[in-house]
Length: 167
Image (cartoon, rainbow, N blue to C red; front, side, top):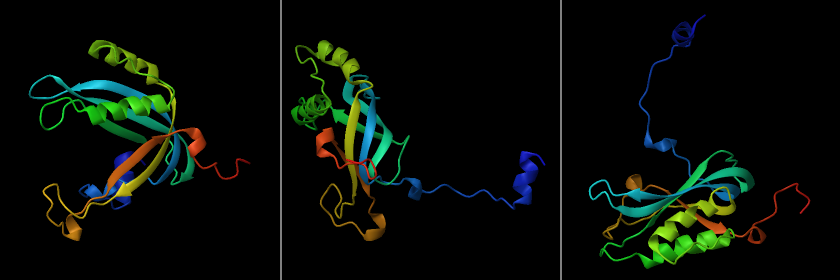
């Protein structure tokens, strides 16, 4: 029986994909820092953020997630058009937490130093957050609320030991 025959025999009927497919991860994970790169604004063609990705290598506690990715954008500019110092501090602190000091001597040196975090072991604590209000402060009806993935970069010593690891 070929593929299409098997689908017909199973009575398969295509259905629409839904937003409900994304599952927020909750737990503690050992990850690999997989990417940190400048991203350009589609309209201005200027770098407006730095995009980072981590791939889960091992679940320390919580939902199994090997191979899943976490990602974060560190915004270079705030809504006022000035340098987003808070996001740049967060990027530098996240790198420092995994043992890397990013070069802040110049913008080109800063971006060139991103290579030094690639492949670094990173420990992540993750949870979901469901806002009850929209960005303008108005109350969101329950059916319009979406849970947002949240996570923080941690040092290994601040993570719980994996069950059964003898630690």
